[in-house]
Image (cartoon, rainbow, N blue to C red; front, side, top):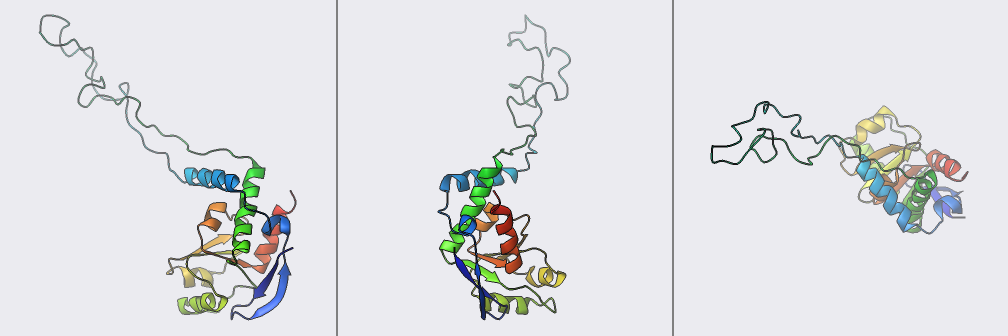
Length: 209
C-alpha cells in the first residue's frame, strides 16, 4: 500500500498515511480516463444553440407569384431555405450533449486519476485547512510551505468562508468537495492537495466496489 507523508500547514511532516492500493496505487487506465473526461467536457456544453426551420419562420403563407407566365422559377413559399430570411435546413436545435457511462467506468477513471498523482509525486495530503483570517497572503504562504506548484486542486470535506475568501483572487487555485470531485478537475491540476479527512472519505467510497 502507498504511504503518503501527511504535512501540516507549515509544511512539517507528520505521521504517514497508509492508502489503499486499489484507489491510489493502480496503473492508470487510459481508455477509462479518456471516456470520462470526454463525457464531463460534453456535459459542460449548454446545448442551447437554436435556429428556425421553414415551419417556424415568419411569412410565406401565400405563393410569392403565380406558377406560370412570369419567366421566373416556380416557388410555393418565401419560407423556403433557398430564400433570404427563409428557414434553415438541418440547423442546430436545443439538445443535451450528455453521454451515459457506467458507474464502474467512472470509478475506474477516478481511481486512475488519483493514482496518476500519487505515482508522479504530485499528491499532497495535509492534516487540516484552517485560516483565522481571510488573508490571501496567509493562503499563499501555506501553499508555498506545502510544496504546491502551478495549478492546484484543493479537496476537502468542507471549506470555511475564510478559505474561500483568501483564495478567490488566486487564479491557479480551485476548490472541490470530496463528495463531488471529478476526474477532469483532478487531471486538470498540476498538484492535488487533499486534506487527510478527504483522502480517507474518497478511499472509503472507492474501495467498496
